[in-house]
Length: 231
Image (cartoon, rainbow, N blue to C red; front, side, top):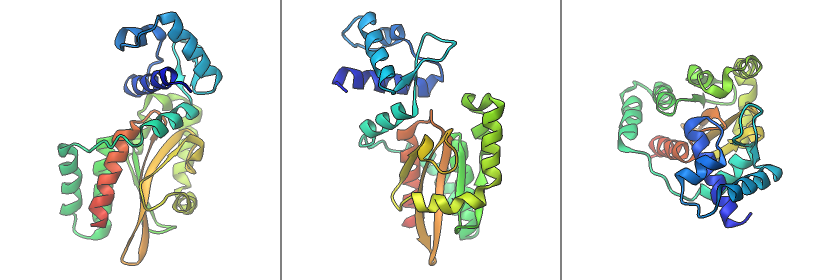
């Protein structure tokens, strides 16, 4: 992928993350200093679509990222080093420190993160003991308005205890990103999480949201939570 197409893909993913609306060539030319015509941008977008990075919804002339597009975006952007803002840090830290014991600390931090990130948070206390919160945030996302998707994710939630062992196996101690089909919980979602050991017991902590999530911001959030838990 040449640099212009790479930059176009970055713009499209970021605009779609922010708006949940398909992105057109005209929008890109108007918003960014691309330096080429709208026709050239359309050709580049068609090429990105042919290569599997974008797709055209039937109801729109714009395009949205595919799973491959999100993966490429995160690969290109993962070293950007985004830092969690101070107000979110304080909110999560306060929730964590005010709880009365370790188990409730993790659950309280999970609820705070779910509210901040507008997603679902899953805590595995071991491979069979699961706590989750923020499912309503997940279902409120525009991607999940279709009944078959709601049913599919609901079925996943019902079977979390069965699937958590698989997630322990696919997430590392460092913050790990699993996009779409790489996410053992659901192909419709992405998961960002990490594992850690407390009192000789392995734990898992992670955020599940739509593939149209703010990966950089959410990685910063999970990195902060990991630091809070492991210090």
